[in-house]
Length: 538
Image 1 (tube, helix red, strand yellow):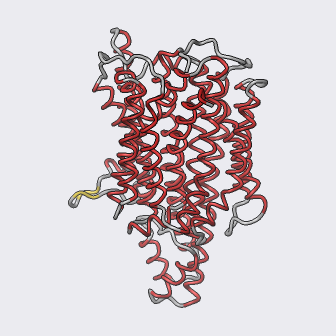
Image 2: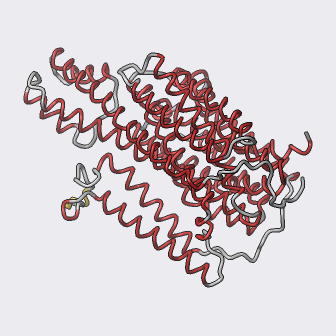
Image 3: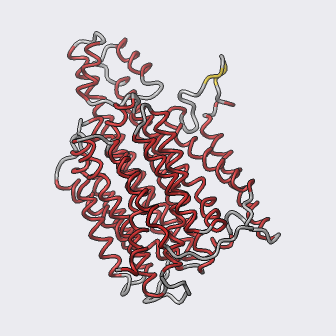
């Protein structure tokens, strides 16, 4: 057991990092009500949490090289613990975003790359494969356990206690982290500030644009921002299109900067040459596709269950339970199969299974999300996620030598959190945008609804339809002076639009998951029983 102490410590830290966002998702309506905000505010907090990690993960990996991975791990644990405590004490959305989206995110960018690098440093050969497979399984287990832990604690106590518990865990991790073996740091390493600015700003602009698409529209402006009396929609095009274009240019400049640094012999923030390794390139892009799908599901499904159907956090967690069960079982199975089946084979099976599960969930969409098909679909989604989680981490870290493990750990965290932020921002925005347009179109075309009511509904939803239950919508209309019959007709149109918007947003997840199958070509086609890369013994 002594030789696995470091792995246990790293696994506990990994568990906390992953648990965090799943807990927030399943408690979304309770947290929103507690902090006096709405679903859009929570979508922003969840998205910017993932974005902070994606934007600065590469920098965190480089700081690990400069300070030493063990020191970066400890500093990150302190920062993360402070962020968790701030989150637990948050009186409003602003403080939550400061503590959770920013401070915790900055702590995670130091801890996550260090976890991968320290696992490679402390274990070698077959033990290293076991370590990476175990960390992958823990990732899956945390994603699976998050909804249940969040649901139980939120329903019977308060969501704040989850973050208090994280603070305590990180204090314990910090106290015993001195037993982790490390290699010599490189204090002379220079981190290129321009690279940090370009990568962070490019990702921030891109995700912010995607997040605002639900309000401003993608190309045709819906409700663009107004400065003074000037509507910001140059040439009649939504600001979102311009933001995405600017982000692409900034990220292109970032890659050009990295190439220039490599050619000049200076240390880049990202060694672009690493992306030429087929196994690493496939592993990273599949990582992003995998977390896009899961983040999207973990946002729109809880929103629908809690805000529209009135589920509490525990009921939501139980509804997602089949996914959790599938994830845990197939994470373990995938780890065992890795000694007899290739990563390419298991990765393709996992991605296909994930796509099939999303398709089953899509087929099960109905007003109450009840029935066995939804449960089976969630189980199959979890099975696909579990198989992928058990393989991709080891593929990524085994694709490079020990000197590059910290950078690859940062890359893996970057792609994971880009997928999460894209999934929450894009699919969440599509859900709200489709709900708005579908509801407005249905009401506008319903001749049984009086003309004045139709005009009021269309005007009221021009900035986005509120996310309410059918009963809440009917009550609001009645309180506003509508007759019971008109209120019932409008509320029914709203309920139909909710189901259709959920179907449309989940179809987007299914389509991108199928495309993810094409990314598996570069995964290793051979079964690797051991690693021949040298590493320090524990």
